[in-house]
Length: 283
Image 1 (cartoon, rainbow, N blue to C red):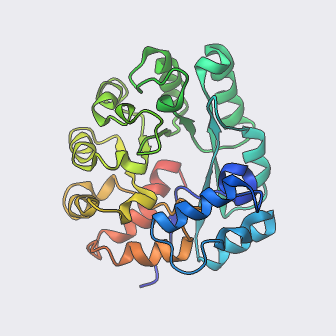
Image 2: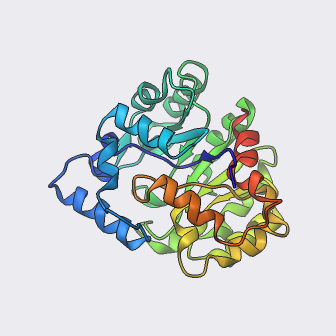
């Protein structure tokens, strides 16, 4: 089956040591370990191809992607500046960028100003927030984020949230705490990376209730307990589930092939792989 694919979570290794930018470093070893942990077949050093910009572009092309989404971050432990994301995606129509902000670290007005700049000047396609990775950790319904949601909704861009088992305190990987946000901002697409895995049933329940909640389980869709994502997508969740490889922590082409083998109905696959992402990103 040959379908257009937008990879909603795809980062080059050179972007940060966290992604394995420095061979021989502990972070590089961790990136290799994570690849093995999430089912990479073949070399666990495959991502070294993307230690250069041209190598990353080649990996995207070799995988046959229509577009790859490169995500910025702004947390106390990791800052991927929006200008860096812009430099990576600029001039490459197969790459799209997401801006990272943190109103706690930056201050509310500075974060709002950065959103305006990232969208209107840098041409990035959405905003990334990571409440559970803050210091202290917060939930997405914390009122400190309300102005960010308001601005993203006003600008008509999606809001991306980090979740999942890498949250330093697992109690902050809680789908229920997104309900108030989804309710208060019904016109704002809320796109959840890692799909709140392993709290799969609760995440699906949240998306059942709120049509503006989208799940990107990315590399965790291949982990135990994730068949429920497939069952839901074949029923009501077909317009709210999206594909992501989580590269460099999993090979792009293998992730596409594995995704196709999970049991999604053929009728829904074009939405999951391309249509939903294109709609949310305004392509």
